[in-house]
Amino acid sequence: MQLLGRSNELIEIYYMSPIPVFLKSIVTVCLQRFEERSIAIKDYHTVQANKWQYLATLYKHDLANYDGRDKFLLNNGKLQLKLQFMVTNDVKVEGVNIPETQLSNDFEKLLNDSLFSDVVMKSAEGFEYKVHKAVLASRSQVLKAHFDHNTTECLTNIIESPFETDSLREVLTFIYIDKAPRVDEIPEILLAAADYYQLSGLKSLCEEALYKKVTVENAIETLQLADLHSAKTLKELTLEFIKDGQAKLITKTEGWAKIKSVELIKSIYEYIMTDDVEADIKQSMAQIL
Image 1: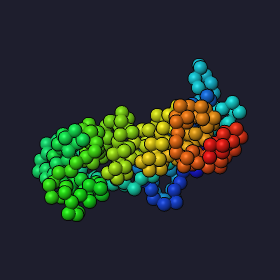
Image 2: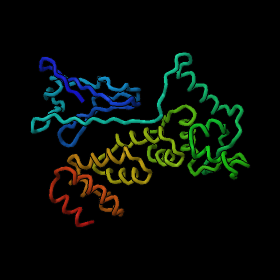
Image 3: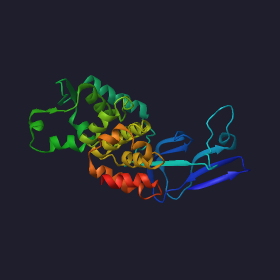
Image 4: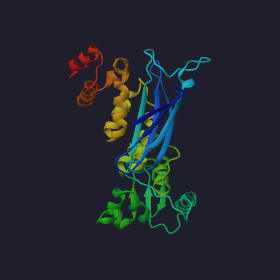
């Protein structure tokens, strides 16, 4: 990381990666009263190795409290920033001959028209989607396994899904066009589906949507969901949220009172023990363990 000032009027933030990566970056300012505000979000893009990348700019007038606006400086006069970098293996290469929107539209039409479909995917209620083996197999190792072996699905060309019709439609939409239009509405369900079908790109979208909704009241439920579906990024971000001044409040929530997993409590305890937090929080967790 590199922070550069100019005439005491602004701060520019840059970062560098030692290897080429495909990542998304978020800069968040931690305000007073445990509030946060995202000031810069750069969607997934390719970052070259050993080259400084511009991230965000903070201006002097943004740090002061004018006209009742939230000020960025904390009570102790410090500026607290949270920098998040989400790396994915689903690297996208921009095409020069075929616009991305046209390709997405073509595959969406393929899904909607069921043209040349060779397999049926049934929802939990029995609704049938006519889809294509090649598309499913290329996007999901779980679905590919249905056709690689002498399975019932391979013989009947019918795949039974445990997910309801609307949710399965969203999963298929992501498989075909790499988008999830309803991810902000049903991130919990889609996270379960992404984990079930091993769709890492969809999982990343769900983790981001769920983290945006993290509060003191739902932090434990979010952490349990992340743990259940092996959502490592969401789990780490939620643990960081708990450690970052929220732990004492969270231990008084209904979610904390209902927590049953000793392993999950232990992970919270071990995570916040890496920093200097209030002794009574550590003591209450130690008593539980």
